[in-house]
Length: 340
Image (cartoon, rainbow, N blue to C red; front, side, top):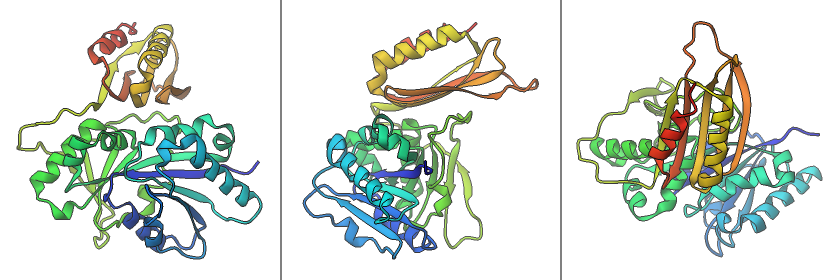
């Protein structure tokens, strides 16, 4: 069996700069074979005409509607057809980038790669990348719930058009984005100029023991000698006036009882799975030498044991849940009750 093709899901609201990012990538791709599945809401796909591809770039268009609304139909069929052509030698690609329409909710798209048996074996979802327009993201979050869903699902967030706003506007945008998704690293880019290794081949859906929270953002400039510059978040001066339904919640504890934490996770997924967008935990289980890793999307979840705790390490448990309308205080009490 051939190795599964790495898939990157590129999302972000209308005008966030996805096509600009792709064109920068294609201009610096060294002619590696790549396929781009383009989706546009409408009868004519405009974005695909704007892509500057090469001989090893295959662009497949979906223009009969938003893929998140037809995920069990046209989207799945398009992916299957691409795999058929690849197997027959009619289409060559070693990487697949799915660019969704700015109106798409990533949830059903992400789940497709785990619930469809053929796609699960042939394609490996690498990461969800969300672009956020610093100039307009606050208004988009106010008016369009899907904008928050795009940020909430992201493994990495690219902040665009920051050169068009003042520092206070940027700080407010970053604060709001971080509140929605405190786990994803944020990179500030201009004109789509972002090295490919910062948003491709992230292995974000592998069960790893990294569950650190972002403490700041990285500034990327193509004309700089530095690869990136890290800047801690600063508190926006203006009083917070937003309360997004989607937020990141962090649960911390010490040693946990295996049966109790298993029952807690099973109960949460059964009751609230539809509203748990992304979640990941690194848990310290009493009388077990290894970390227990949990990672899920809605009701699709995986568990595995990771690396062993070292004698000098503090054995602590952390679970991060990005969700909407969750009874957080109730969940905190139940989580705390799993401790030994």
